[in-house]
Length: 309
Image (tube, rainbow, N blue to C red):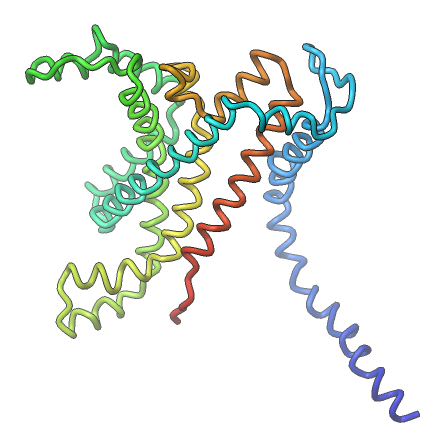
């Protein structure tokens, strides 16, 4: 009898501790509730709806008329154009992420001091986040026009031949990526500014006392302590790389010769030009799964294995 009571005591104590662990969640859930509701409405529910839509067939009016199973996925993956769009999106991420990180980190290091001038420059750098991307893309189309564009006028004044920005492959890719980086670099700067503000000043002060110069301080103190910020910035930039749509939609329509035919543009075109909601949803799920795989690899590669108090 004593042995049986002793054997049951740990289970009893665990059940007694469980409500105590949940007691502190009440206030937290109250504050988290609005964010959780928004997350479910605008993230979880659309993903669930896309998964459901990817298994069906639809008429041009958007009404479900049948079940396709995995046929939409087979159709998407067997399409050479879609596979090319996936590769282009991956190449865009490979080109965009390092450039955006370097520019964002450089801006954060230069603007970390809390002065009036720095505050103004910070505001200017994050301002593209609040501009309508269609508006800025339309302005860019005028600026980079081959005949009357301001950029080509400047190049002509410098004795450089005019560039066909929208009808040549490399210039078109450069323009689309440049617009995306210009819009998102302010976010990367804010991430690194937050990381810099979290670094204890005593660490840098101790390194200076040991004779560390600016370069050594940057390489051995600042950059290692920004590892978590870098991890977060890489994930954000990767996500943005696979969501480039408006510049392609307004400027190049996937051209010239498929040079900017990104997967995001193909999904939009399949859904709203061809009204094939099932295939478009299957394509979006494929991109989502690819993003999950890429970000998992990034998080493992950039995993932070240290901490400081």
